[in-house]
Length: 493
Ligand SMILES: O=P(O)(O)OC[C@H]1O[C@](O)(CO)[C@@H](O)[C@@H]1O
Image (cartoon, rainbow, N blue to C red):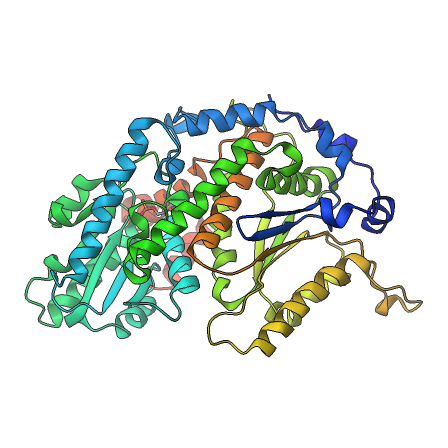
């Protein structure tokens, strides 16, 4: 059983005291890995706590994950997303490679004109079947994107109209991405897309559909020819699936080489977590810092600010990854979790957020560990002066949160000692983005292991889905509470 005893070895010193006592802190608590600097110096993590941490249970869990053992005990399956990056049982790795070959073949077919002149792709999916592709394309496809990609997730008809309005039905491919191929929003939106193609007079609308799923039989039942079904393993969780066929729109829009470079970046992190000792293991250190605040100091949230417009979708991607994984109350054996589990993750982009929510971060009553994610190199064709100011603002915020400012006037007093992690990418490219995302996956995994919870199930979302079905049925609706029935009546449903 993993132990959180290391938290007891953490002196309750302030950040200023930690820096004063340790001249090498800035250097030793910052780690350069794959072109990314992970700087933990402005957290309350200490050498004592790291030394007191027993990494054995973590490494055992990691070995089980990479061996393709059943680590998702509540659903009785493995969690094989690392196999997409070459780490797993030989069978899983071979199968993932075969599936990537099919993905590449389909990209090649689109490029060779097998679907006619295609200029756009409508990617329909939700949660893990949408957030990853949306992030990849938005982050990396701003200048070189070869196809217009629209990601449609919400069941709101306005979202449908907006997405369709930006595409030409005559030259659009529709990818229906759903691990289960049963998700209500996705199927409803797929029907809307089909009607859109039909309405525009597209000769063979079903011929324009591609399915991406772990349930190929259901996609075939829907009417999609099996040659256009890209599958992935049921053991790849939705929020861990962007490495699989779910990444198809990114592979198409950015090119398969870029997609492979992203997988390589992630694989570099896979290797790192296995080999690095605790005091160098970047995702593990981040998890130790997270637990220092949630378990050790009562922090309920953690905020991530992307100081780069290209990463504006990162906070919402991380919300699913972190909260759907570790927002649990019971341990693997069903016993209650000992103390808080996942922090509530929220965030935004810098510098916008500075003028909206940073007041609370600097002077509010909540302890909010902050994370800054920035890129040293400006995006192509970006004004270097803007980029310089963006970065300077980012670093100034970390310094201000930590240092504070003393004033006799309580309204103008900044207490300081507020922690932050800074993640600085040398450049934003497929490899560094892959590494960044895999870092977050491994950090989430490490946290789950230390908390003794299962990061790979998500039963919490099932109740709402069941109720959404029941509420639409007059017989079961009668059993709903009076408040809900009154709302349904008021809305005229
Ligand atoms: O890919 P699917 O099966 O459509 O599911 C979409 C999303 O729904 C969830 O199951 C829960 O809402 C997520 O875990 C998943 O990413």
